[in-house]
Image (cartoon, rainbow, N blue to C red; front, side, top):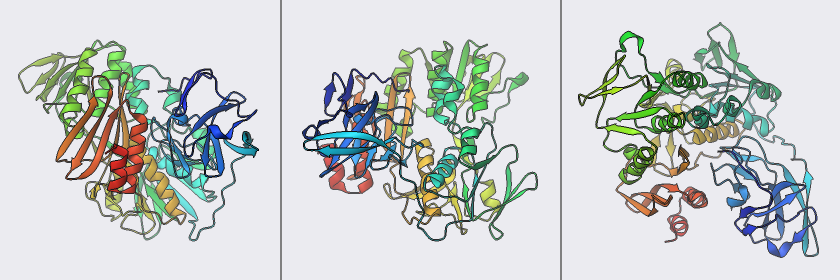
Length: 525
């Protein structure tokens, strides 16, 4: 989802503006309301200005993640939050506070003369560390979103020590959501899949090691041994090893092996097969499986989905929203075989447990992932459905952290110890681990967030509900104007929204206060 900015006709929370006010020439300060983004422009660049008491802050209006319109977001404290994927920026400096973004916004000085305000570019302030126990070096094992976000935050916070990132897949950190969405669908080139290029990491003085994976961690010696025999000393270590697809474990006759999706190479292999295929079976009605189905339909393949449950995604989204997702896919030509499992793969297609055979030229499997914990286990760390961490993402050995799909952490919002496989959460945990490495003693308490794109429909989901007592569907799913609330007793655990981006942001902020009154107010109750 890339931004399509049109400077002559933009929407802001203050109403639709036929022409953006020229902030270089100045605007009447009375037009700005407390805590509401005001959209204007400076030399053709969209800028948001926010009144905070007697003062004003101004930053670029385009989110540095996918180009979301920050003027349609919300202000929380000293941050402005993007409505698309909930990135957070500091209004005073433009710095990234929380993912999905990794790059700062341009920052502007606001001057007031009489009743008029004008904006003027200014350089972001240099970060200086005034903390104790700064590590001599940081090693990051894993070149995914958590690892990349950790490295970026270390540098953004002014850390000047050695940072080394050990990855096991080229070309380095990739934007994984696009591997099953726009890139797989053919609407984005490969350049859009790079979260951080090797050149960008080099500019940030981050050493990226590929083709030489980590083999052993020695907590007592504070070293990471690589396959080549090289040893990396660390002051702090982040394990961001992620997860890997669960295998189908079925015999594939005559070499008809299924395809999986985790890496850029996996996505490229699916694209290459799709160019020669006409029919695809997707095994697994998961988010990955259904996003693959949507992308391959956009490539004009016939797609059939096989899943063991009655309603796709019902375990996560509930039966009503899951059924709506199925209807959406069916309206685009996808056929479903639910309450079914594959039992054999062969040249003719896939034999199902129902006795039916589904013809296929290719099979893609998306039946979940397993955390990659082998390195942690051999290091003597506590492992139980992921690497066990505390509220600061610290492992059970000193100076070792874990973040992302592999980390099992105490979630203060649900009250459970959870391991959550969300891209934005992985980035935010990487950012939080970096801050803690530099001495910031703040527990990780962000509400989990993810988005799932199916054709032109996007579901935003905030919170985490592994189980619930009741689900409330409010609005109209078919009109794509709805929210789905997941309750346990009187506690709101999670909310999924369609077409209500700003409301999703507001509920996320309220949930993070852990105040029932704030949540009720955000719900309009």
